[in-house]
Image (cartoon, rainbow, N blue to C red; front, side, top):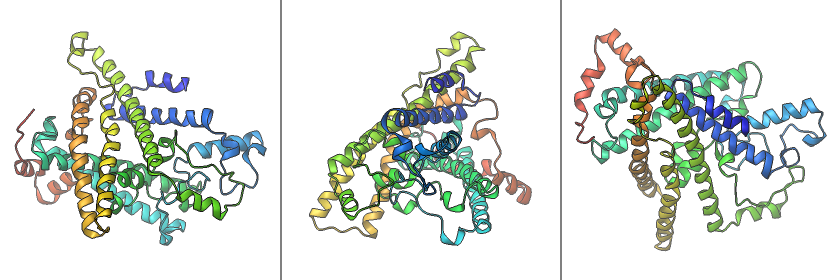
Length: 390
């Protein structure tokens, strides 16, 4: 943990996006360190499906390799701590190496084009291009702008994951089953709880549930009994909600670590221009936290509404899910915009020339220009609503 703290002081890369992402990764490392050093005994409490004997009985080198596999398995795929029904398995049609590599390369291309389209939207939208507030074009556009920001981040993470999956399978480091999709099915995102638990937080689920309250632990070397399986199903709502609150506190901490490294990078970047300019840069540390700390409130509201609906005799169906999708989009659009606005100015200050999304020509633009001689940004920008606020 001391090394992680030291890394934060020297982790500035010159790119605000990379600084924030690296800081969040360091925050995840802190949570991982707390779990392995203070809360669990991994050599005794964890088991990989390929283990023949408990890890503490292995030689030093075997234990070292075992621990490395554990650290780089955040979703617990193949491990005893994998959350049930939390990871969408690899499609049975893609479990041979050749079919898996082909499918992931197709997904890689799809995600890249998706990211390119989101970047084009940001280049065309005068609010996002000029650095105006996400709320400056009305509430509907505010929700759409937030959704595009989410989609851009989603697509680039999925691209990286697909590339890593292809590489790992090509060099025979892993079987295809070890690399399911990075995110869950979007059809499950009709409540805030499911959006985070089943769709978005796939890689962080184990780290964010660090402080419980935990279900009764079972020795991974003991057979699974019927009594234990049925006991897992009976959990009070208050216990589940406490775990969710703790998870979002941990999520806020991870993103505040991103704030810290971003702030350090900004200070380093402007130090060469003179101390007076530093007064124009707001303090970014802690700006990410409110959005994540508000998520349990949204879950509490939707749980209360669903309970009232059940007592009124309403059953879950297509129309209730459609209402749920609108609710999730409205809630995210309302509260995420404030965090994005708070971070937009520091991000721009930390950008190196050519780093920002608005500074690069997208592949879609290049293809349209080459094929049809059309400049997409001047063509599409007038279609967006005018910026009405700062």
